[in-house]
Length: 317
Image (cartoon, rainbow, N blue to C red; front, side, top):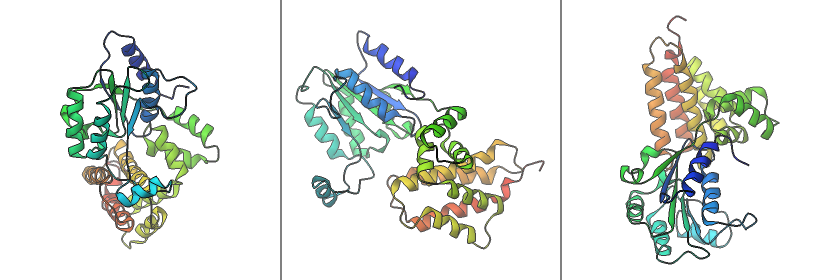
């Protein structure tokens, strides 16, 4: 089944596969949660000719993503235990992949390399990857999944053909949430759709992480300010004392969405809202590599929202 918004990417991909000379590097660009990773794996399997009923892994598909953060976590993975992931894709992973490229594909004449997400490559890892993109072995194809393509080296972007994955209309998002999350009430679905900004995966995660109350707490601060700090305390409690990386990322994206919605109408002075949104964008960009303290992060988000509260008044309100 083709995921929502994937019809055009598939048309482009299959047209290229049927051409005389297929480009060796592809950049799959779009918001987090629109299914780029699923597309990359399905496209790689189609490229190398994997049988429809074949198992999940294939020797000619190499996927690089977040590995264990250190040797201790690596031992946990080796023992089949839960482990803490690194916050980036490291040069050692690129070097190991490049060593594989010195051999022939195992079962056919093609090999696919998936890097997900490529925008979390360490600088040294990105420079090392560039060498493979400049001189790719015959039969090797790269699929780089990117939520924020601007974070990639320009020299990497210039060597890739771009497949863009669109966001989904609100009506389609509502239909999807009703089908996949039937227990979500109307306010939760509405908040999820607004926060996800067209990303089905983000909307489903919003519902699964039960962020509806977090959204309401953020809106309360933005509406009323928080001179006594009580609302910020409520927000911190809803975020949780020890949220994992995915929850922190979702909370930051939610805060950005809540603030961005205030820019849809005329504001008496939009500058505080714009400044708050810029600061939230900065925090979101730092999140993959910074070890945020959950309590301090919640207070920082709340403080940014409180500072912008006065700007929520409409120019003619």
